[in-house]
Image (tube, rainbow, N blue to C red):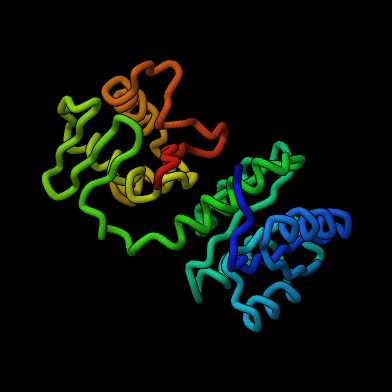
Amino acid sequence: MNHPPKNGALILVIDDEAAIRRALRTVLGGHGYKVEAAETGQQALETYVKRHPDLILLDLGLPDVDGLEVIRQVRSQSNTPIVVLSVRGAERDKVAALDLGADDYLTKPFGVEELLARVRVALRHAARPARGSAAVFRTGDLEVDMDRRRVTVCGHEVHLTPTEYLLLKAFVTHPNKVLTDRMLLFEAWGPEYGSEAHYLHVYVARLRKKIEADPQKPRYLITEPGVGYRLLAPEA
């Protein structure tokens, strides 16, 4: 059972639909979070500056300032977690939002338990020490020792090529976060490969064969259709 946080994080809900704002205020407030709400991009940015929320739930379809612009402006100032609320079929918007620095997305309509889980993960990720401070990453049977560049599964060492290791390292340094194809290509191959998605799909398949018990039903490297991939790591 998930207990309400003792010192509830402040969540800024940005959505132009009053019914959704009310519903999110009720659900989040009922689980111990403090909630501020905004119905326009401009109002959201003003509230953000005044209140410094711990997390932002952002609908991209705002009546004035584009939701992507809200992400740009927030990211120019801080790393406050941003979870995008998107409508079905808006993969291009999801990808653009994630490339700009959003941490995750939820597709409308979404379930309450999924919403709360994504909020907890985003807040936990934001509270982690700075990137690169943890020398050893562990989740399930997978262990990555970044100082020694050593990867083990169930205690047995897995031999990765340099590119496979760079790709896995990108996932490990952003656990539970959706990473777009463009982000992963940049991390593993560099900026000149930003549109070479076929490289990525081949290497993800190779990684799965080496670290997954069943590559056809991956436990760690999960595909986010039309968007990218996510490393599932509940402990992270």
